[in-house]
Length: 341
Image (cartoon, helix red, strand yellow):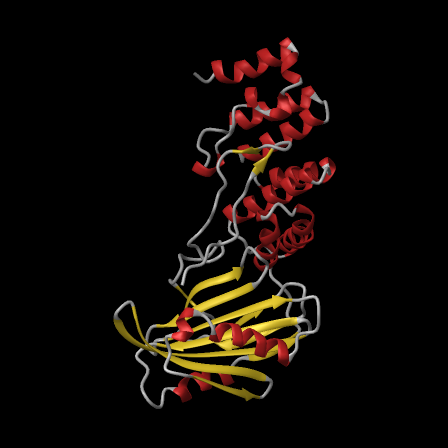
């Protein structure tokens, strides 16, 4: 199973997008080790950031493969246990109507019609507590014997559907109890407060689809949480600030964008892209003095920046197009290149 993480920054100065998009795929949602190298916490929580509750389970012995928000906004967690060969995925999806048992049955009917489920030797259905469940065994895949037992449970709570998928390779009679024991240790827990990382994850899903207005509230909460209780890596904090500033800029809020990047410079005064962002904002506001001052700072700190912090050429940047008509401003921009050559 693969999972592309919704973390990339598109540095947008005006409407065009500058440079390649930074996609941090294959990482555990930033600030964590590479996929599959981090052990799940003893009690792992999976929740939507706008809900005061979530699912918890005992993650002892599991290796996390994916943990975050899919581009369509669904909360997703996937982990494997290399000793028991049990895998677990939990997906939470918010819906506009009340989540119901009938909705779960329809969902599992669709799962039963998938190609992998059709490879099984039969599907059994049951209901345990408030869970609707289907179970089946896939004997082989790709010409190899795998004997993979699958248990998929669905439940609805507070306009949210939860899909819990447990599977075990090399299934033998009696292993059903192992999967049901894992299922019995998954509970709904209330009083959950999202971390800055989880809020950042939630904002990045709409951000990647260009829905900047929906991303802003999550990013604002992420930054506010981070200011009170810093926990993000420096790299992730930079991307959060860049994405929030860009979202403000894309929604015609230059004051919000300026305040965001100025805050970024208080925390990270030599990070060249923050200076460049400010230069573009000043240019859009018709302030050539501050635009040039910020550009000079950006190029002064350009050397030694991370590979993903390269600066575009301001001579061809839309934000500076009108200012470049001023010969003095144009000469000052040219000097940024001639003095460094």
